Amino acid sequence: MGLPDIHKRWALLWLACLLFAAALSLILLLKKDHAKAAARGRAALLLYSADDSGFERLVGALASALCQLPLRVAVDLWSRREMSAQGPVAWFHAQRRQTLQEGGVVVLLFSPGAVALCSEWLQDGVSAPGAHGPHDAFRASLSCVLPDFLQGRAPGRYVGACFDRLLHPDFVPALFRTVPVFSLPSQLPDFLGALQEPRAPRPGRLQERAEQVSRALQPALDSYFHPPGTPAPGRGVGPGAGDGT
Image (cartoon, rainbow, N blue to C red; front, side, top):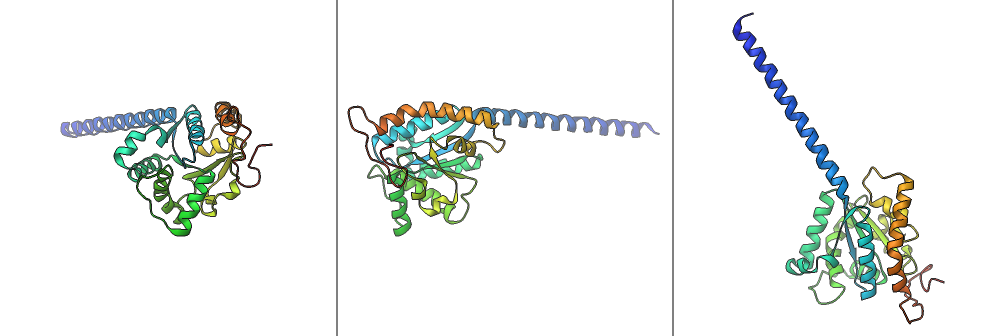
């Protein structure tokens, strides 16, 4: 074997070592990024109708509780200035796209007001108006998510929820019941399971997280359904909703 052949073989061996080292570095970097993403939690975009200030406080309590799981929650309550600058439709489109691109989930939180707006939209095909009232942000969000439901792309990417005593899941329009709709807090374990990454935690861990969220949510629920100094309101819609008796 001549000297040039030995040099060539050493060069090929050196190149193979460099390629192996580069591949190993890339694998370690991807694992590190995955670990960071897991620590930050899955992205969740929470959409709701601002029926009244009490319901907004209830939504805020749920969003804050979900952040402790951990989940990376986006909700317009926390981004009013940004949404005002971009416009509701542009903001919701951007948030929906980013959430789904990251493998996250969009949560549709149904209330009597949300159901009325959904039914109105589906019946009349109303386009999203400008920002003129408390429900217009939800109308803008509908313009972003409806195509996914109408084209069958919602399962696996969307989850529905409503609150016990306020709205029965059967009253959610049928189009939106093509994805699971959970009643909270009674179905919190199943709801949280649907929000987790595909590799969900053990059932015991999931139950522990559900209890944690329930404890954080209970003061807001008590305040909403039984405001201090007033009788229990009959705000609910449908069987299983109402005064909570």
